[in-house]
Image (cartoon, rainbow, N blue to C red; front, side, top):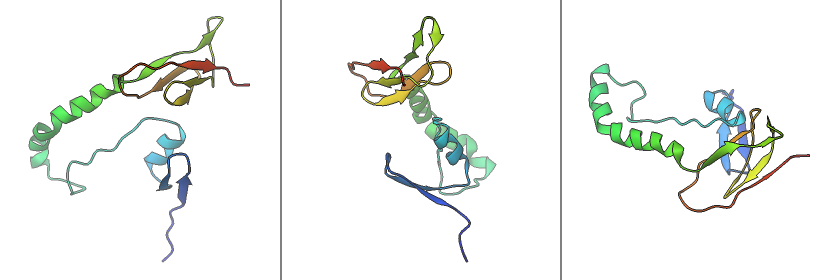
Length: 118
Protein backbone atom coordinates (compact mmCIF):
# COMPACT_ATOMS: atom_id res chain seq x y z
CA UNK A 1 0.00 0.00 0.00
CA UNK A 2 1.37 3.39 -1.00
CA UNK A 3 1.48 6.12 1.65
CA UNK A 4 -0.69 9.17 0.95
CA UNK A 5 1.70 11.41 2.90
CA UNK A 6 4.16 13.71 1.21
CA UNK A 7 7.51 13.95 2.97
CA UNK A 8 9.62 17.13 3.06
CA UNK A 9 13.20 17.79 4.06
CA UNK A 10 14.04 21.13 5.65
CA UNK A 11 17.76 21.72 5.02
CA UNK A 12 17.97 24.71 7.35
CA UNK A 13 16.72 22.83 10.41
CA UNK A 14 17.88 19.37 9.24
CA UNK A 15 14.41 17.99 9.81
CA UNK A 16 12.23 15.55 7.89
CA UNK A 17 8.47 15.90 8.22
CA UNK A 18 5.30 14.91 6.37
CA UNK A 19 2.44 17.02 5.10
CA UNK A 20 -1.15 16.85 6.19
CA UNK A 21 -1.27 18.10 9.77
CA UNK A 22 -1.41 21.32 11.77
CA UNK A 23 2.36 21.37 12.12
CA UNK A 24 2.65 22.01 8.37
CA UNK A 25 0.54 25.14 8.63
CA UNK A 26 2.38 26.50 11.64
CA UNK A 27 5.81 25.67 10.17
CA UNK A 28 5.14 27.42 6.86
CA UNK A 29 3.43 30.39 8.57
CA UNK A 30 6.41 30.75 10.95
CA UNK A 31 4.17 30.25 13.98
CA UNK A 32 5.51 29.08 17.29
CA UNK A 33 3.61 25.97 18.32
CA UNK A 34 4.38 22.91 20.32
CA UNK A 35 2.68 19.62 21.04
CA UNK A 36 3.01 18.16 24.49
CA UNK A 37 2.48 14.50 25.21
CA UNK A 38 2.11 13.56 28.86
CA UNK A 39 1.29 9.92 28.40
CA UNK A 40 2.07 7.03 26.10
CA UNK A 41 -1.68 6.80 25.41
CA UNK A 42 -3.19 9.03 22.73
CA UNK A 43 -6.58 9.07 24.45
CA UNK A 44 -6.41 8.92 28.22
CA UNK A 45 -9.27 8.37 30.62
CA UNK A 46 -10.84 11.54 32.02
CA UNK A 47 -10.32 10.16 35.50
CA UNK A 48 -6.51 10.71 35.22
CA UNK A 49 -6.61 14.35 34.02
CA UNK A 50 -6.49 15.88 37.51
CA UNK A 51 -3.54 13.70 38.53
CA UNK A 52 -1.64 14.44 35.30
CA UNK A 53 -2.27 18.16 35.77
CA UNK A 54 -0.91 18.07 39.33
CA UNK A 55 2.14 16.07 38.18
CA UNK A 56 2.99 18.45 35.34
CA UNK A 57 1.59 21.92 36.03
CA UNK A 58 4.80 23.45 37.45
CA UNK A 59 6.80 22.29 34.43
CA UNK A 60 4.16 23.68 32.06
CA UNK A 61 4.13 27.03 33.90
CA UNK A 62 7.93 27.26 33.61
CA UNK A 63 7.72 26.47 29.93
CA UNK A 64 5.10 29.18 29.37
CA UNK A 65 7.26 31.70 31.25
CA UNK A 66 10.10 30.97 28.79
CA UNK A 67 8.22 32.89 26.08
CA UNK A 68 9.64 36.05 27.65
CA UNK A 69 13.23 34.94 27.08
CA UNK A 70 14.92 36.53 24.12
CA UNK A 71 14.42 39.65 22.12
CA UNK A 72 11.33 41.28 20.64
CA UNK A 73 10.49 44.63 19.18
CA UNK A 74 9.15 46.66 16.27
CA UNK A 75 11.07 48.02 13.28
CA UNK A 76 9.63 51.26 11.92
CA UNK A 77 10.66 54.01 9.55
CA UNK A 78 9.05 57.44 9.76
CA UNK A 79 6.56 55.99 12.26
CA UNK A 80 5.37 53.24 9.89
CA UNK A 81 6.09 49.52 10.39
CA UNK A 82 8.74 47.99 8.13
CA UNK A 83 7.66 44.65 6.66
CA UNK A 84 10.28 41.94 6.00
CA UNK A 85 13.14 43.81 7.65
CA UNK A 86 15.91 41.44 8.68
CA UNK A 87 16.83 41.61 12.36
CA UNK A 88 20.03 39.88 13.40
CA UNK A 89 20.93 39.12 16.99
CA UNK A 90 22.21 35.63 17.82
CA UNK A 91 19.90 34.45 15.05
CA UNK A 92 18.24 36.23 12.17
CA UNK A 93 14.50 36.82 11.87
CA UNK A 94 12.28 38.94 9.63
CA UNK A 95 9.54 41.33 10.67
CA UNK A 96 5.86 40.62 10.08
CA UNK A 97 3.28 42.92 8.50
CA UNK A 98 3.19 45.02 11.69
CA UNK A 99 6.98 45.41 11.79
CA UNK A 100 7.22 43.07 14.80
CA UNK A 101 9.99 40.57 15.38
CA UNK A 102 10.82 38.08 18.11
CA UNK A 103 13.41 35.43 18.75
CA UNK A 104 13.68 33.13 21.75
CA UNK A 105 17.23 33.30 23.11
CA UNK A 106 19.01 32.49 26.33
CA UNK A 107 19.66 35.34 28.78
CA UNK A 108 22.79 37.33 27.99
CA UNK A 109 24.03 40.35 26.12
CA UNK A 110 23.51 40.52 22.37
CA UNK A 111 24.12 43.13 19.72
CA UNK A 112 21.27 43.42 17.23
CA UNK A 113 21.08 44.98 13.78
CA UNK A 114 18.00 45.65 11.62
CA UNK A 115 18.33 45.91 7.84
CA UNK A 116 15.67 46.79 5.31
CA UNK A 117 15.15 44.21 2.61
CA UNK A 118 15.54 45.40 -0.98
